[in-house]
Amino acid sequence: MAQPPSSSDIFLREVDENLRRDQLRDFAKRYGKWLIAALVLFLAASGGWIYWQYRQQANSEAQVEQLADTYQDLGTRNLTTAPKKLDELSQGGSEAVRASALFARAAVAVEQNDLKLATSKYREIASDDALPKPYRDLALIRQTTMEFDSLKPDEVVRRMGPLTKPGNSWFGSAGEMTAAALVKQGKKAEAGRLYAAIAKDKTVPDAIRARSVQLAGSLGVDASWVLDAPAQ
Image (tube, rainbow, N blue to C red; front, side):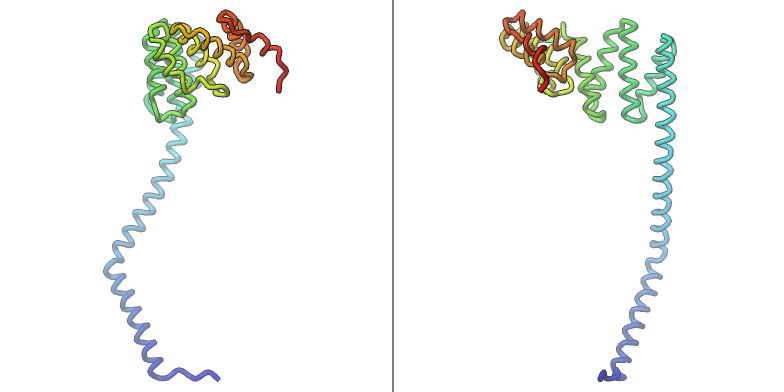
């Protein structure tokens, strides 16, 4: 049978409860204002973050619409205002909008025969680590294509090295330039084997594969069989 608590136990419990109550009151007096301020700041920050997210989405949607309008101008060959709009869009906004604007600006520069400006835009994309790698890789391909005649073969091989691998999305284009650079270096056998590897890779566009077969053959490597080989 449970024993009723003694008077000393009851006294100690009341003292303990009163002590905790006093501590809580003192804590509230000392830190209450800070807690309220912290809560207000938290609510303000949360609201600010939600508003920022909304503004980011709204700004992004507005920029996409501006980019679409600019593409319409380009479609009608209205090159008067498009360059300025593209320059503005390339200065900020989402990564996709900025990269798209830079690529479009480079294309306009090519259309206007300003190859120096086009090359600089591709270089800007390729060197921007904030942009996704596929954008940078494509820009590097185009930059190197435009600079190919002025580059030393070693530089072409160095640039294209990471992309000149079977299965890579840019293997065809990067491999072609690498092989051409190898020919300039006098490494014709190595270039022929690379052309053959390009022709063999079924992920490479057919036009590049067909061209690689011909170039491989001109370097003494027969790769004609790869175009007729059954898919595995």
